Length: 152
Length: 212
Ligand code: FES
Ligand code: FES
Image 1 (cartoon, rainbow over the protein chains, first blue to last red):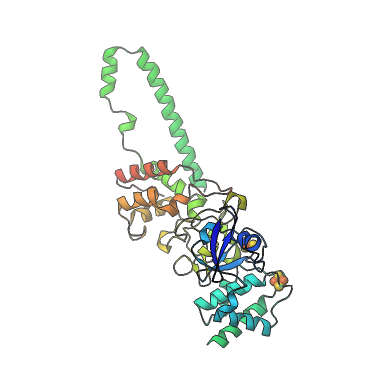
Image 2: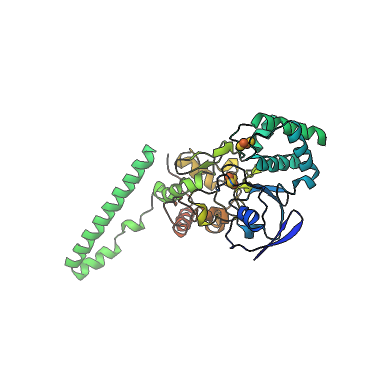
């Protein structure tokens, strides 16, 4: 039994120790907003925050998240930066199919928490690990700038 | 690479010649008289002759230029991956501190330990303090002589004296990852203890460097 702090709540999750955090969240805690794309940290769909920093939950063992604050897409709106990002996402209608977008929003929020006014180059480098098969990249970049403007 | 191969071939040829010489010496010894053996004992043996520099540094070079080491000792801030040292996928950069860029730190994917075997042969490996070597410590695409000169120069080796150099090879957890890379990754040509022994032998001989 693993105890995790997810979105401010303590959860007991019954999974083996080497289970990736992604499956502890999805199968163990029923938080299916975090997506599985590749399972080897190649796509970014599974991005969550650990103590405010982005990680790919598909390769992080659940035990590595113990004692830390896990934030998923279900809890990111409680963060003012996360809220600003989601608002900008809606305003610019960033989402196409949506599959990659939980990860995109988690990465974008992490970037804006670390750098309030990122340049295009900052955005391209920070978001380069999040793949979107619908190619919403241009809108993602615009929405990050828009969120940055509302946070200024 | 040509030179490296030639050096290796020459080294092998020398070793084979040495082996032949030893076999012949044993045969001769078997036939020799007691006084002849006594006389032979006083003569200098090849092992006592000073070892040539290239020979002492080559084992160290072969390890630090193996993909597990050299892929993170790069000049352009772009980590390499796989045995062909291709640039890291996803346009990954080491950033100012070698630990990634703002919003995409190395630790986003590389944790403090290798992932579970179930993650497959190519999931991102992990070790404590995952980061690129500083720019002064570039081994990628550098000749044996320059690597050697850098390795013994504290301005290029992270301020390490000989004892700290040995410690780097023997005890640093991130360096140690090179010998436990997980997944389907190849290993350096020497084991960690063999590498440490080679570094100690090189230091004991006053860190000689090959001529090229
Ligand atoms: S599912 Fe984790 S990065 Fe693709
Ligand atoms: S919106 Fe479809 S994969 Fe990104």
